[in-house]
Structure formats: C-alpha cells, structure tokens
Image 1 (spheres, helix red, strand yellow):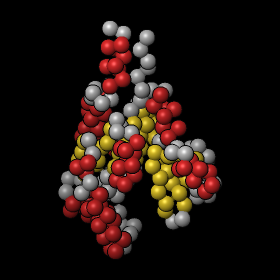
Image 2: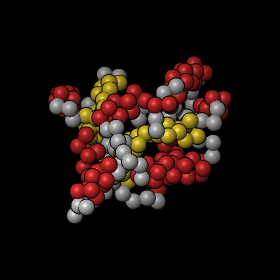
Image 3: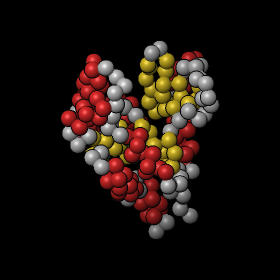
Length: 205
C-alpha cells in the first residue's frame, strides 16, 4: 500500500513592499491543508502572543541546544535574539499531507535549500524597480533615508532571484495569485517532488 502523499514546503521570498503577504493571504484563504510555518525565537512574548501560534518562545539555552542538534532548518540573530524554523514542526505538517508556507528572506532560503532541496522556492518581483520605489514611498510611514535603505536591500535580494525555482511578478494581484496556484500545481507534479511515489510504484510493480 502506498503512503499518503506528503505536503509541500513552499519557500516564498521577495523584497519589502512587493506584496508577498497579500498574495499569500489571498492564495491561502480558500484552501485547506495549508499553513504558515511557525518560527521559534528567544525574544519575549508581546501582549496577545501565544506560544505555538505566532512563535515558539524558547530560552537562549534551548535554542542553542536545537542548533547543535541540527533541529533548525535555518536560523539567524536579530537585535540580540535568535529566530529560526524548527524542523520538527515542518516535518510533522508535511507528513500529515499539509503544505507549509515559509515566508523568508533570501539568506534563510538558501539555508533551507541545503536542508530541503525538494522544497518549492518562489521569488516575488515587482514589475519594475520604479514601481517598488513608488509602493514604498506611497506608504508614507517612513522617511526618505529609511525608504532608500529598503530599496538598497531590495536590489541585493532581487539579484538572488535566479537561484529560485520560479518567479512571480506582482503587477496584478489576481494574476499573481493565479500564477502562484499554477506554480504550486506544476511543482507538485515534478519529478523531484514525486520521487518517492515513483520508487513506490516500481516497488509494487
């Protein structure tokens, strides 16, 4: 008897202001068997945050133990705190047939690729750099220097887009969501994702 099909790990990256969260929210809204990965952190919980929902809140000692044991898909330090993706949470969901979305920056995605080469890696691009500049400026929440820092970071991130499996251009939200759906379905039929199924079919031949 063949095993239940595993879920798919979807790694989603793109520069600030490109609309990653909006695309994912619309894509996931009417779908079952899909969830966001829950990260672990050593920072203190903020009011209203619940352990296991927004984050897994860990002590620094526990986090470092998990690093040493190879139990983090990726991790980094920001402002004196650790942030990372626990392997066990992701593996449990995938084994249950649930797709797991990991919205992450390019450095973290590169580490995930080393650990999970079978995952699906998607990068979201703006239709042009000027459109991205306009979106960030249009927010009106940051001064010019902060916006420029975001644009400089975005340029560096977009240079890494070629290392991803697919690129989605967020020019029109509905079209971007349709493209994401098509990409996920195509990847689900790929040889690298169906490798275990191929082996099982041959085993029971």
